[in-house]
Length: 280
Length: 210
Image (cartoon, each protein chain N blue to C red):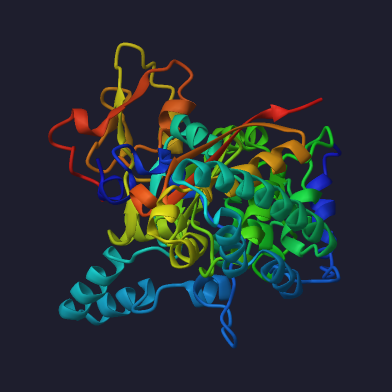
């Protein structure tokens, strides 16, 4: 179990606990009280303190004390869409059943990293959920192009399509333990994946699984190699088959779902003693 | 789909967002005030005290149940009536969300949830209802430090409050919502203020009547 399960799981995996998706639709404000936190807008809800840019600057200056300080901060950010976990498609489908107000929308990361406009439901790559989605019109700049609400069945279908295209799935905590975002991510466009892979920092946890290759079934087609975001799966020319570095594997399962011969399987992280506590 | 479908779309500007009117995502304060005046906890506890005056313990339980069943039904009917009269943008978005067959798939749990949130926010002292489940299968919530329970305790005594006759008000409200909405639901009370220090109610969706 990861620390999110310890904190919010009620004895099970934290994202399979339906309580973590529940929230009130309304609240009363005391006289004169305005909007606070994420309700006031995603920017104001973002955690304060040093950013990835500060880390890069400190690395450039060679200031090892500052590097350590910023890394420590980035590793311990709580909530506000900066804390989450990779989940494979199989768990994503179970999680979708527990969600309400599932809406797809433009991805904020891609608009920043690639200046990519996602203008309509055919282009959206981000999924949000929870009653906060009912109030998206409050932030028209964030949700340019609008939000398309989906039934859980439609959401599962959409998610499978995203998986097929090569996006992995990340569940994000907004205000602990409330789960408010279900990102469809890829490297290098997702800022969380980039922070983890390129700089080894961030509050993104590896999934409860790791990938293993069945060399008897694998025919060396290399499809899996193109789907790994984490630099964990390499195609080894000598054996003409892939090799997975399980310490680097985030257990997103893209290699498993992409394999035409079912030669890659996800196994429980806790079943491998050396990896049972490797979450970052 | 035309080959250049996405290319054509990208040439179009973003759809201009026009805010609907009235444009509030919050509950209407006039509506809450009306419900508070008619069904406030102080007045309800005073009426209960009058209804059970001079009665023995067994009779108090029976009279309390009857009192609160009637109260719960009137309370939620008024909430539903005013809830329709004072819509907000949050519930409009719920009702505008339809699947390809035209079904309003967010009605459960969000329409019952809205009614119960109106009902409690108008009559309790907390600023938000602690919702512990809301998905396509279940709606469940907690009532912490119930103001009505405390008022009953103050006006009718500890022993009467601990009989928890007030639970029939909340249960009846949930039953009335499911009846009025033609919703087939299993309604349960899973914790009580007298034992656990808070009340907890759940509504499990088993479909809509045809």
